[in-house]
Image (cartoon, rainbow, N blue to C red; front, side, top):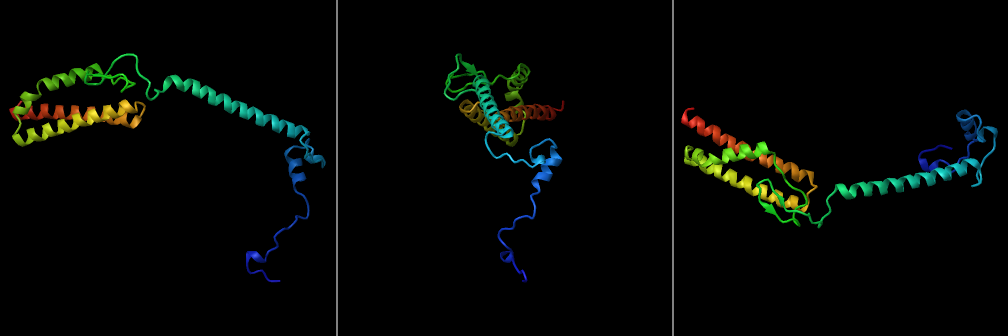
Amino acid sequence: MKITSLRDLPQNITPPNDLWQSIAAQIDPQSDAAHGVRRTTAHGGSAARLSQMRWLAAAAMVAAVAVGIWVGRDLLPLPGKEAATDQLTARGTPVAPAAVNVAYVADPRYQRQRAALLATLQARLATLPPDSRTKVLASLAAIDKAKLDLEDALGKDPSNALLQELLVNTYQDEMRVLADVHTASDAGRGT
């Protein structure tokens, strides 16, 4: 008989001998399989051990979930949970406690540098050409709007790492623009 496809092969082929006993004997010479004894009942020692291990694994999993919930309840802010005190954004303006669960506290050094750059901003803008001045003001307005939008979104989802990173990047962009205006106005004066 010539076989031309897989369909031509027999569906069930029984092996000429059971290889499991020799495999089990090589793995564990003391096992029942090494001696030709097969345990298929639930009352056997290995079956009882297997059942016990399953119960221990299930208990360990339940305990791990319980510990995770217990630890996580204090670490993660819950939506709708109101803060006890008023909180401040990076600008220092009060925010309603229901809107924000975390405070966006900026580094004092950042606050000082930003305040110093903002104090001289109008004078430095006056030294720039009108086109540059318009572009700088548009950039600062876009950055300010982005900060407000990000702070609002973080008020709704304070644990969102992407929003936190975007807010930090926006603060850095604002500082970069303010520092560039400072540098450009100094260059225009010849200092």
